[in-house]
Image (cartoon, rainbow, N blue to C red):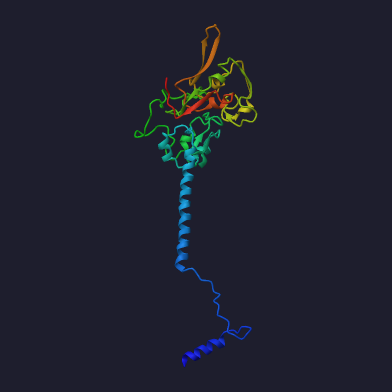
Length: 300
């Protein structure tokens, strides 16, 4: 009896077809994925994104190191590279006190450490216009120092034979720089392009009208460096690397007699070279005939 009533109720609730017959009941609701399956999918996507991000950051740190081609010329008084990189806090104090803006801070794409100070001698060398190596005075951590602590490495050939005499201070009561180690050594890398070796002179702006480098010319201003392009030269024999070197007895023009009796000239770097880079900056040929090998010790 109950089955008959349920059947009649279902027939009355069902819509009728055009011929009066009950139409079949259709379920229009879409089947939903289980909640657990959706949660697992979201978790997988999040994990994949996180792994990709970690790998991306790792590659971001590796790419600049892989692209590095050589070490940097560090400011005067810099510790050995590993000690320098571990102690420098990238504060930029050395940059702020440099009177010729020779010190710059590295970018990540250069592969030498973000914010680490360096010098590009060809663009702007350290000419010691500060007289007292103020970058060392400004360094708060000892990454730049006058004298290394006894526990730190001092490579053979890096200490200077004697305190360097600054040409601009030769008439002062104390003409020396408080600098005990070199930061590199100059080298005649391209003698074939050196004007002195060719027996040629030089006339005009050493690096052209667009060069923005500064140099202290004591005869012009004892304290204020001027643009190199504003100080043209007139030399019968090019000797700019010798005359503009700020350190006395660091480089000279060596004269030799050729087989035919003619005189030949060649810049010769001496042991007092501190690696400041002025010779590289002022060299009027391109690429520079004389360059500074950073971190290299002196060898006779």
